[in-house]
Structure formats: structure tokens, C-alpha cells
Length: 150
Image (cartoon, rainbow, N blue to C red):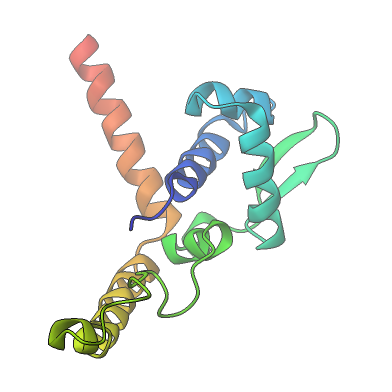
């Protein structure tokens, strides 16, 4: 199983908001043009981010802005805002292994604890990365791109 694209789209949206908020009205249509998805997808995502206290969205075509400083928003915050994954439930283990098979009888007991630990490690790493870190990486790449063009 893999994490849905909602997570990476949410990070993309937040980078666009921060990058363009002083130059453009950052609407769902504007964001959708960068992500290359339907604006409805962006509006749903913005509502999830708003419920999590990550963005503010003005009514109508007022645009979006971050609700907190980027150094106060972690990748884990974004992940929790847009993914419907409960603690220890990132991996879905098949439900009906054959109980007459020794592997089938024991696979859940063997995998469950290890997969929960893997999820915890992933979440600790996500918690250590802020959106400020991601924005800094983004700005560095954009500058390198500009240098190559000139």
C-alpha cells in the first residue's frame, strides 16, 4: 500500500501558497494550474488543511494563506491533515490468510508489530521536517534553475 497523492499535492499546494502569496491571489484555480489537477481536488484539500489549522481560506475567490509559520508546520502535520491513516494502520495486512497453513496462521503476529514500528519511524522522520525546510530546498532548486538558464 502506498500513501495517496493527497499528501504530496498538499505539500505542493503549501509551497505554492508561500511562494506566490505576495504576487498573486492564490485561489484553488491558481493552485490547480500548478498541480495540474481539477480545482475541486484543491478545494477539498484546502478544506482538510483548514480544519487542521494549517491554512486560512478566504470566502469566494479571496485566496489561501498559511495559518501558521512554516517552521511550525511539519510534514507529519500535513500528513495527518490529509491522509486517513490511523496510528499503526499505514499497512493493511490481508484479512483472511489460510489458518491451516503455518505461514497463514502466523503472518499477522509476525508482521503487525514490525509494521507498526516502521510507521512510527516514518512519522518521527516526518515530524523532524518542517515546511520551512521544504521551502528552503524549493528556493534553492529554483535559484539553481535560474543560474542554468542564464
